Length: 192
Image 1: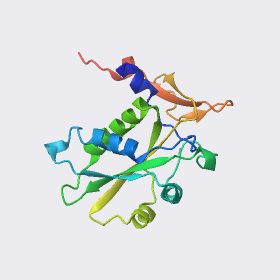
Image 2: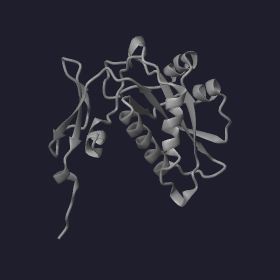
Image 3: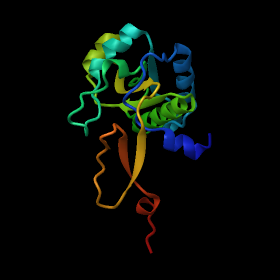
């Protein structure tokens, strides 16, 4: 797959075939990719928790908020829930700033998932206390985000948006998820 195709296929998928497992080995491979990302000051403060055991996957699900722009959708139905998660943590004994690193790591995990025939979604609207208790995460680790993973069962398309169009994603009557994106000429600036 060409890199451009990989990037454009790497969307936020929110509905999965939860009968298709994501193995612990696959999660380890994805996290290994994140070990090689650039890191601010090369501090490498990120840590990860791989969650693939079905009981823990099910227990983690209610702690995540899904698709804020879809007001009439409370999240994936039980059969369409993620098969696994990667929880991204910031080790506060190393640094208290994780913004650049966590974004690079999340995108790398999603690109790796896409290259493996999977899909995912970055979820940052979380019940952090419940997640901390469930996974027994010590206080030294900030819970930054959760990457939901699985075999996608939805179609996500990119729509070109004009300058004043809404950025809100939506689902059409066929269940196709549309994501408006600004195009190159709208973002590549040149000042004379």
